[in-house]
Length: 246
Image (tube, rainbow, N blue to C red; front, side):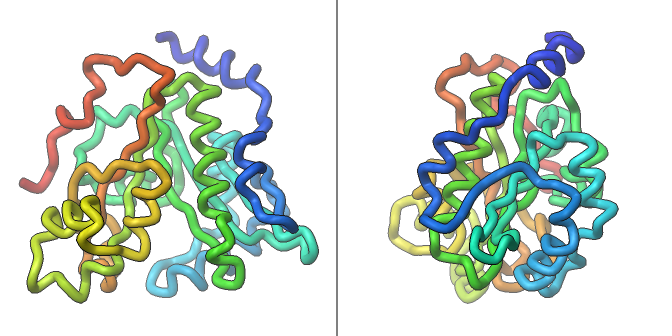
């Protein structure tokens, strides 16, 4: 499909997030990111990912510039502060390896590899301020991105899930076996289990997605959500995407 035609469709589609708002608890609202949010987002990022470099205002401005309709924030209405975010971009997943790192898939966090003609929405990051966790905000942000997938008539959304429960079991279990046990509810993972309950499917274990994630022993899971309203293109089967590290 012509990329110019796709872009015209996307610019004409209103951003409602009606379903996402239904998942929010009282006292919170959801909207697209603005430049007023950058400093607060950087602070939250540093709190949630203490071993990683937080997003800079320049990087967040780049996200907004290349794909403004894909950057979501939840706001705590009483304080007016950002409480959580979900950042996304469009990619042609067949141009990557299945086990490429977050750095590769996001061009080092810059999102300069955003492809307006992409058929896959990549969930680059979702994090919630510690004071606002366990309120269902991540679920609302996830639903907002799925509404975007439907509006843009995309086939799927793909992301990477941390596996912070795996680190303590890494000497006992292969990471793929760990994923299968979590999928069968034989084990519970603080992050991956939540994604599975939210409708994601865990496809494959990948090493080095977030290299400094010691809780996950450096491993993560490729997760995927399929838009059942769209017919899958035959050449976009995730199983056909070769891993880089076999």
